[in-house]
Length: 210
Image (cartoon, rainbow, N blue to C red; front, side, top):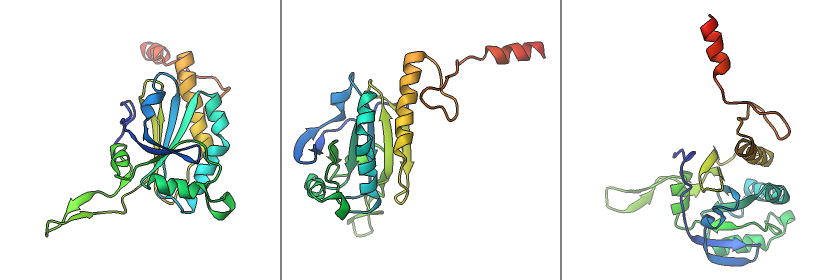
């Protein structure tokens, strides 16, 4: 599995469901470079059980992400038509009606593969037939991308393990804090708490005295 932290987020152009109803054929995260942070998250499949709980949880916090200058974008290996169909189903029937942020259709699996979250890979068997070694869907990957298009945080959960949206918000806060204040964030830091100066002066003084 790829570690993308510190690297440019893989670029792509793919269809995406926009505002729960419209399909854009050439959606790209590149549109946000220079303007917004991005929380880009993958989920395994449309019309499942844990996935809608996550998508709705992100929708409930979208205004908070936006207030922090951060866009939320989802992605799965389903088609854009599948995304659209799921978005017409009411929440109390297992659907994602009301989700407004973009949902990318990674139908050919290349985006999931580029981000290192694809479950399985293609291979060729003894008869020369193309086969897959897994279900070819995405793990629950999440990537925080800064305004320069660089991945600054990534988290990958196995298929049954849902994510904590408040933790994603906390990481956006932490990134903003370090950029704006030039300080680092210690363990369990949250917005409003003090940061730390990244300095070894105290350690050097101790070693010199001992």
